[in-house]
Image (cartoon, rainbow, N blue to C red):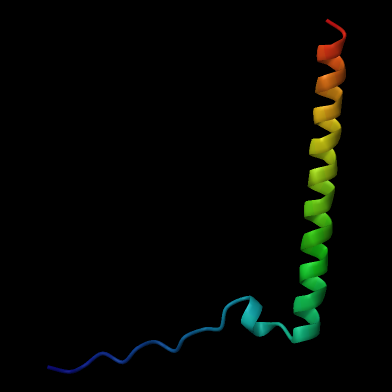
Length: 54
């Protein structure tokens, strides 16, 4: 019985990036997460203000 050869493993997305590109990507992701947190905080403040009117 012939053994099957494993297909060559393709590198993952982060493995293909250089260290500098990885740091840039991390900074972009963190800025995006900070923006989402600010939007959420603004919505929470707006909800609190709306509740306080009643």
